[in-house]
Image (cartoon, rainbow, N blue to C red; front, side, top):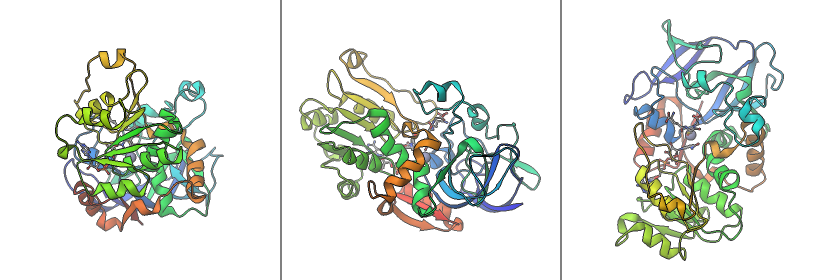
Length: 369
Ligand code: NAD
Ligand code: AHE
Ligand code: ZN
């Protein structure tokens, strides 16, 4: 079949809207009509050539929602007509990682997914006879996409696609990092670095679990109002602090935060986030994705004295099990999504979504097909 898609032919070049050829689903695969997709900073990072796993030409996009249009042989967990979210973190429920109960990082198809291929080692997309790579196992910047069954979460049919797509990455990543990874408890002090599409979801997750002080840190003053809208109690712009930002934050939290979250991808900020944690028990969670070649560092004494440095992918959420529950939380009013969707674009306008993100003018842009 044919599908309209925004293709990343090369790094650092705008996406091109073209018609691709798409092979139907093979055994264990599902054809999804994507109805809406968000644009996450990770898509921009890959397009900018900063991802060591980045492949071109490819169809980017990993934050989508849509409808199952066809299933391959042997598919049993979803049916034609189901409303679904494609998952960049699948859940096979039989690999060592899934069975461990200790991680959401299913390993069943990670090797081929990282090479831009389906589990059988081939790609379903092509353009003028040349293969086009998949991206993060999702490729939601195409109106139709094929994904493995273990990477499909079935969601309720009354959830609007425009909001549900954000659960495919940003909402789950931010809220999940609070609930699953850090396990923030009521009354805790929290610092969130970077108040974009992820950081604001960390803030609303912290509010949901009853955190006390929720401090937001961002270089962009416009983010103060955004943070307050979702539960932030204090805002700090590091460029306006006299002296050391870490000491300033430690002063605001009576010796350091119980939990800090990096949502910037900047390795200097990651270090500040760790060092702004309370001696003895503070936990710092790295969510931001750093560019290829970057490394983090701190004095080991920071860890010897009880701070814990950890990371979170997809908010520690088990894709097929937890994603439908997060959609329920949204539908039941436990969390908000709609106000964060600042721009709704057509596929032809997708490059504007990247421009808005880089200019700090959007929280989430969503492409509606
Ligand atoms: P975004 O562009 O919407 O937001 C980033 C925010 O960080 C902006 O408000 C920006 O002003 C702020 N910022 C940038 N540099 C800063 C600095 N030095 N100090 C303070 N604030 C700074 O991006 P997003 O979509 O929210 O994504 C945030 C990060 O999370 C990215 O690195 C993205 O790749 C990553 N991410 C990780 C996961 C995961 O599973 N771990 C999932 C989604 C996104
Ligand atoms: N491919 C990069 C790392 C990219 C990365 O860390 N991706 C996150 C999701 S970001 C979503 O917006 C993730 O879940 N990683 C786990 C995984 O298995 O990819 C690199 O550095 O090579
Ligand atoms: Zn993402």
